[in-house]
Image (cartoon, rainbow, N blue to C red; front, side, top):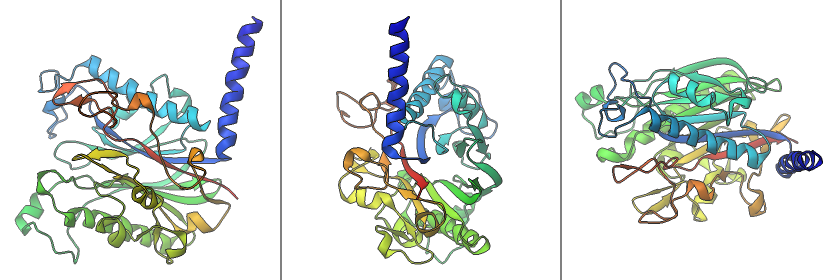
Length: 356
């Protein structure tokens, strides 16, 4: 009995010590869940690949394994940080049902994550969503922002092609943390596959930026984080020109965004391997109000790197392919058409906001 008590005490102190390392605050993160589909057909969606009789033979057992894996990563981040995320944006999820199944997994049920989700127009049926802890974040407003071509950007698509184009909406959720107003945008910008041009991702970033500026002007002092799978690196035009992402705090103008992952990308870090190269598509940018004013401010996350960076790419050995052609890259669910039972082809990213 005494031995059991000592073990429990040691585990408790370990969690407390982990929390103390990063200081008091709230974890804000993003995770591409890599095709989290259930086993049922959604009317109007091209989800046939992820059905029991589809090309992936997507059975209930595979779906349950996928849910367990995603929950395992979220729990591993909580164990590492000494707390669950306050906000976790997600992408590549089929519908609200898969998020309900995810948050009820025993690994993360204690977080009591609540869900914000809207069905979007993506032809393949993947959406974005937001998980949040209601004891820390109080939702005031949420809306789905459609992708449009109302821009001065010169698009490669013809008008007819634009009318047929369907991609993910951008999710915006506004609320409060400790009485201060925040807005979180979750994006999954158009893919690079199928010869989709940079112009499409630039337009998606422009939509997120313009909506953010509207909020900053309507609610002076609001703190904003724009996160997502941008399908671009932090130094691409979509992030630098159209999202106004800046590498340092000193470069920021009144309506610019700080991109903590730009310096990480230049230093050689990556959240996924794309065409044989490390990239950071999983980006979180924050506005000046989150950095400079109020009770909360952005704090360094990556303790083991001597607080050099403000962002963190979360990677553990179990999330990484240990052998074969893709050794050292994220351990994904499918590889070369075969189910390998991995986690995601992206590593999650996050930041910490905390008290001064």
